[in-house]
Amino acid sequence: MGIFTGAGVALVTPMNADGTVNFEQLRALVDWHLEQGIDAIIACGTTGEASTLKDEEHIAVIEAVVKQVAGRIPVIGGTGSNDTQHGIHLSMEAERVGADALLVVTPYYNKATNKSLVKHYEAICEKVSIPVILYSVASRTGLNLTPAMVAELKKIPNVQGIKEASGNISQIVEICQLADDNFQVYSGNDDQVLPLLSVGGSGVISTIANLLPAETSKMVHDYLAGDLQAAQKTQLAQLPLIHAIFTEVNPVPVKAAVSLLGKCDCHYRLPLDAPEDSTLALLKKEMTAYGLL
Image 1: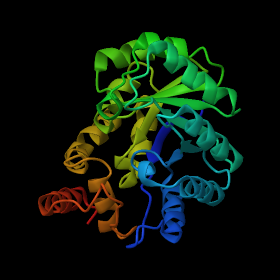
Image 2 (image 1 turned 45 degrees about the vertical axis):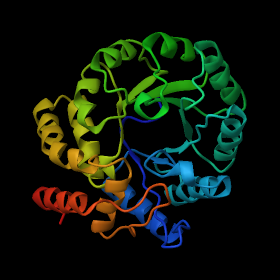
Image 3 (image 1 turned 90 degrees about the horizontal axis):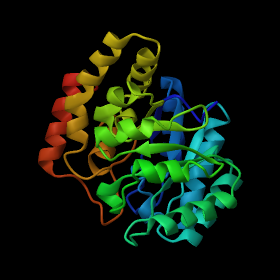
């Protein structure tokens, strides 16, 4: 079974100059990703600037994506919080508006203990009936999900996957030992997709897919179908562009890159702001080299 196999795009959230969400551009982006053959859409994750969206906007974005997708691929709502009650609220609301699954990041800043972390996820999962994907990204949250903790959290019935963004290959290998029909492991790093697939992963929750949805999906499916040479060629070809979109903190460069494609305006909410001129120059250079401009 599983939630999805392949590439899920961690979708940017288009905004107007006044900081409001541009729902027209959002719906057009969803349509484009569907045309390109993306395998899933993650709305209101880190790349979607969820941390600066009001709750009403947060849920409205997820709902707009759900309605536009209309059941064709899974829609995964980002609903993590460092306040368990807030996480419960967002998760219940995301389920109410039709999300197929939830991406729930570890609580940030609070430094939860192992015991309280289990209680946190149990409290959220008890209030929803849809699958939950754990999200481990210690570089942002200060909290790493060790293989032992993943094994413990995996016992919660609707915990059905993890987005693993530690960058630690040894840890990824250990976590992939836990993968089965009811628990999928997704790469959270675009430059480590094939290494993760090689030890049993199911795909990637991807930032670069905002620019290369068809190629990123095909790369995963090529690998899983046994065409290792084609998959390797794609992974290596994407590297310069991957490095470019992480020159500054995500999602600043990738949103600028989507804007260069003409698919959204380049507006952010503080504390994020427009990229440096040098970043824009690098994006244009690498996007041109890849044939996107």
